[in-house]
Image 1 (spheres, rainbow, N blue to C red):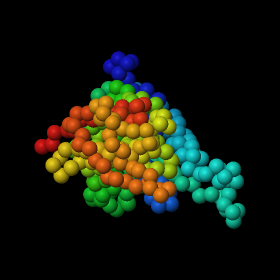
Image 2 (cartoon, rainbow, N blue to C red):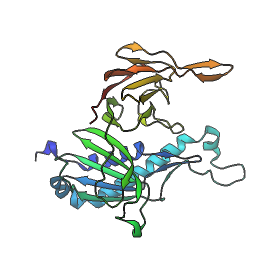
Image 3 (cartoon, rainbow, N blue to C red):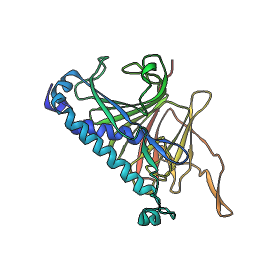
Length: 289
């Protein structure tokens, strides 16, 4: 294995942070981040890093704490950030929290032989399964982030069986290749509708982009039709294009509010989607058996 192919400690920490950001689960009063992170490495990389696992765990936990702190600062209005307390004097409750209030990070050699030297797979879960049920097939949420040659792929799986080391993930319906301010990524579409938008603490998006403010927090929606093809709807202020052609706006201002006209356009099996002219996503529908 060459030095170029070798996983660095920084690669592992970045993959954990990416997994947490892509795995946030919004509730009504707060948003939950997974607490458990299982890191899978090629045997060569595992041997190379095994003496540093303690340091990697400490830095990864510091990164996750910092991300929650940053998001909580951004989630509070300016007045609340200034006062830091509610009117009754009690501290303002955080809007972004770890599912168990702490982080658990474990390292393991790839048990299935699917990772190459230089790959990192992070599988996260929101909470620890009950010991009595472990291995019994209980359902949980598992989010897998794989770094391959500097690119990230994230897959959400809400039906994985607890007790397996590397749970199978849903078949991908399509993929999006893109580059934002965090680098190059691959996003696998595994459900029938997704929201694409700029990363923001107060708006949920399945694909959350770290990019210019020109991209709306909820910029576009992609939807799979009953026939298996895809369509797209523009929800932005500065527009969405498909292969260079602008989509019709689906939102219009009405009496001081906004109305969704539900204007969908067919999406070719391969297409280049432009968001506000500042970021582009290469879409490809994947063949299904």
